[in-house]
Image (cartoon, rainbow, N blue to C red):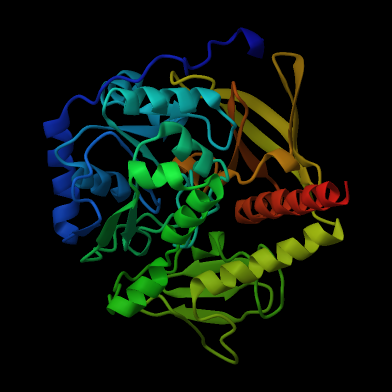
Length: 417
């Protein structure tokens, strides 16, 4: 019975960070080969407690945050799978567990505990690695959180981490130097005078970044021979014939199995068609074109996807539970999952209007392929579509576009009232 399974204890107060010398050494070992450069702006006199908001492109982000905080302690918000089979260690180093993209008042209380005792609360508000090195969606609740905590708001924006090990192919490409900017966005006094809207606007502006544009500007070349491999996970639709889910990669090339068109990815990560027009030289431009196509489906009311899927659950940090096969539906109403576990049917529905984004994984843990990560307040479900053509990237884009569609409808209704 799923209801009888022990859940992760989200209420347990976070510990102060221990093993600081070990963390500093590990961070240095990661960053020195990449010659990381950290620039601080407006940080004179800024000491803990404060809220540190970081962008998220690769695991190396955590090492930069450790360097930026030196010599102070920080409590990091980490997804539940980060605690898997090592909860004791993650708690010892001060991590705070979170189920992604859920409305969680418990997390707010935990962050308040951290700053009230004089430490730094570290948050990755994009809540997932960037899919193509550009800003992911930020929650509108950030401004409220900042005004509630009443401590300085600091941003840490890293550059080069996506180029070095993109989410779609984690191979270290030896990029150097990488860069990071630590900026005090609001002092405690400035925060008191700012509205929630002004705080949100400042955060969104601070989080504008493009790793591929940064790479080109810096002239950093990637000579890795498999640099295009995995890119089809993000660029799933051919801009030439418009076919979805037939893109493939090999070595430095991206090609469409449907029409045969091929693009070469050069050492500056720009794309060049081997024949005919280069529709998109800049990878994020291709990605945003896909988003516009998904938006058109949503606005027409035609977006829909359904398939059979394997489901693994992670109710706690002890290990995954195999829930077998289920039916996954993602449509204008949101996500629906219908399955059966030990003879008992279960039904999970997450309304589109309640979910501003969703977490996805490519080749998650090397087990069953790509998956979409659905979260409730009590469960985390890893859903792997099977025996169908699909792209979890499109599900992520559709989730964001559906949420914005219903937000526009809501605001229009409120204006009429």
